[in-house]
Length: 150
Image (cartoon, rainbow, N blue to C red; front, side, top):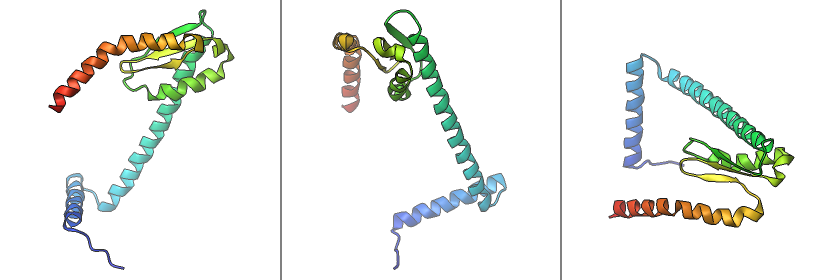
């Protein structure tokens, strides 16, 4: 079985080889050293990513624990993180750890998101209020998008 690479594949392979050669020249290393160092960097990155997730989960758990033992049944937490992805699953998991949260609601508000666990009796009213609060932002975003598309 023979594989025949197209012109673009050959060109890309040549550019990759040139890049590797340039890196070896600039840093005074051998090609074999590059793979070893890349593996070290990726292992360190994976370790730090795992560590970051564990710490984020711990922060979310502590936020929920704080709300669980505070007076009142409605809690709002303001965060500065741009990405709220970790809170989506994290809030649910953390609330399950504290039976005190069964009759409480918690909302986490960030610059671009609102996520939380709310009691059913206030969910519909809260959804309307949140949608109304974000309506001007949604209109502005749509306007900016429409202008970019033009």
